[in-house]
Length: 203
Image: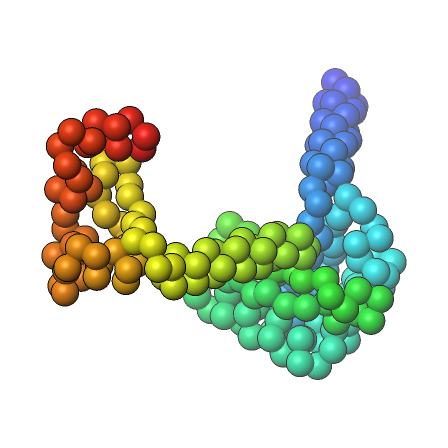
C-alpha cells in the first residue's frame, strides 16, 4: 500500500515537472532566480539562444561575474531595493553584448511569496515595443507642430464636443484671450445652431 502511494506521488511530481516545462516553453522572457547575495541560482527560458551563453554559465555565479561592472551595479541596486522594500521594481537597459548592441531590455524583479532569501528577475526584450513607441512619439510631435503652427483655425474635441485643445490661429479668429475660458466651452457654442446637428453627427 505504501509503495503504491509513493508511486502515485512520483507520478504526480513528474506531471508537475511536465506542466512547469510546458509553462516555460510558452514564455518569451528569461527568468532568473537570484539570491539575496546576487547569486544566480537558476534560470529558465523557452529559447536557450536568448541567454547568449549556456545555462550552466550563469548558475551559481554572481551578477558581477556575469555582467559588465556598470550594469551589474544597477542590477545589484534594484535587487537590494526589492529585498528591502519587499516589492518588485523595473529597470530598462541596452544589451551589454557586442553581438546585439541595439537590443533593449526590461528587467523586473518579483518577490516570491514571503521569501526574503531569493527572488525572481524577469528579463524581457522590449526592442520592438520601444521602436513602435518612438515612431508614435515622432508622429505625435509632427502632428502637434502642424496643429499649432497652422494658419487655419483648428481644435480637438472629445465625444461630448468639449474642446480638448485648439491652436493659436483659432484663438485669434474667435477673439479669446483667456485659455481656460475657451476650454470650458462646448463646440455648439461656437457654431451656428443650424449647423450643430451636422457637427454632432460627424463626431
